[in-house]
Image (cartoon, rainbow, N blue to C red; front, side, top):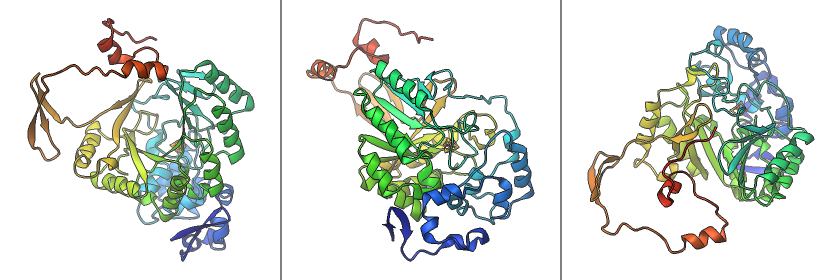
Length: 422
Ligand code: SF4
């Protein structure tokens, strides 16, 4: 049972688990559960981590070999989740560098999602018609070894006032943008004041309807999710928290408490998991993760195929592994616990959903379906095929929906082809 005292986490009857580490044996609960203490006591080198848990020779060597190319850091809290006795512990594999990171695979791409190419002003990526990605900082509390944006999280910087002005000006000039994803780096690795000033400015732009905050902080430093932060975020609804749990071992009592605090303040929490070889590339592990997330009111949203970023090929799985995992979930557990499996297509093509094939055959009269147990059934198509709705035009006018896009444009207009621009 956990409670909050004075804006920080406190664990009732909790074992002060960190005290078993000599470095933190004198740290009291008040400090441990203070996110500022966590931030000021980050473990910033592999050598320092070696003072806390025993490392293998390969890990020490990898720490030295990757130092120049990619940052290392972990909050003390996340370091305590590493199993000191298991060299394949899923937390360890996400935290400690591997010598594989210095390998370059033929398929590696420095900027696999084409974000630099779609950057319209510094930090703002406009790739989809009505939503943008805003990289508010390039710093993180913990540098995940599988990071897609490892090319940019090398430098430390929050957006300057001038850059924020440019972002706001762009958004004002593009009213078609209705949804903004604030990411990074880690979007909660900035102070409350700075974050609130950005949110305030965004809410002054009438066309911005939805705000999403993408952060791994609830996983790696849950004490950052204070009542004060949640009360502040609540003011800028509709606002969604997109978090990033990859393994059930990350869903500790502290992390559950962080998620509960967000949800209790009216902030929906969605989770994005990356499919990572030898970490969570197993149906049992992911089924457990997704069910546990759901029990904690966190919706499993996306399961991502690992991107083609440089130096992370050792984390990639065959695409079939993701399909197998979805197949083992769909029908076998609540639909709410089944995320969408997607590949963020290389070159900036956006997310492409990948799913097992359940439609076996189709004709004008019937479609043949396969269910999760392999049972085949026929669904008879209706005689009447006209599906036009009388209110569609009225909705277009009332919500000022202009133009048609994609297949809808081809189906509903005289257009016979759409050629991608640029
Ligand atoms: S928190 Fe996000 S941006 Fe930062 S290293 Fe991890 S995956 Fe990359």
